[in-house]
Image (tube, helix red, strand yellow):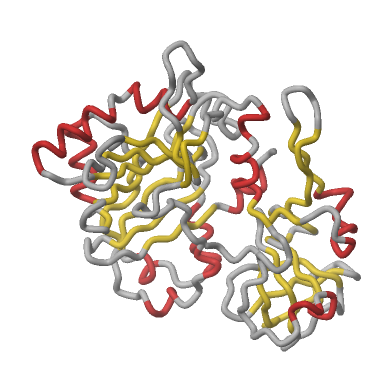
Length: 365
């Protein structure tokens, strides 16, 4: 699980030129930069760091200063407030990109005695903004709305990739390693699987990022997740592949289309773009070349592949270079969300993402 709130040590804190009250801070072991008040932190100080996409509780007075610019409400179809909180987003202050929120360690006595790097997410009641949004979809009347059948299957990994900013050791430890690099679509994660060994009564399943969804009933509403499952005949194709190979697969991809995020690429209808395939019985990911061959054979769209076998950390040596590398345009000419990297070696499960700062700064609620 992603550390949305953590105990950190300040690595540097430098004044922002041409300002009197602002500095930019970095943290040991992290690639994020955060704009802070001048003199608020010094190298070696302990602090509490909240990553972007953190959703902070509105009733904690320590966060009251965020109310004016960070308050985000989820509203029902009838106009009632379902939930509110403070969302931490990427910002640009005096020309400097700031990602996250740093607060003094002294403000959080409940963290006393914990070591640097400790995960404070649960302790401080911090949620992931997108996960809260997903849970409230039915009440908001979103096209992603679908009744939950249960929790996400434990035998399939969730598809949330960690950002490179939290993996700075990769710049040295993964030199020489080669990666498949794909474009990151701006949509909603979806998983579709066929596993008669584990679930013989209901072997086919459709999942959102965190939930398994009920099969639609005749005459009832059909969510976007199930619409694309039917559109591409995923159930029949996974069943056929199982009969041919005895392999039980879970397809994971991005659901894009009208009403999903801002739909910047203006899709006319919902689409499903595969970005990885999980072998349920072997409990490992299918090799990139096998995944692409599967999608080609069964006419299921695949995310855009930018590089099939690229020595990323030999060519890209700093975080700034990585963030620049992530920038680009989608196939439809809009700002790309970023890139996802997966080790080319099928026995290597290394995978992570780099999100474009240019995209984040243009992103709207």
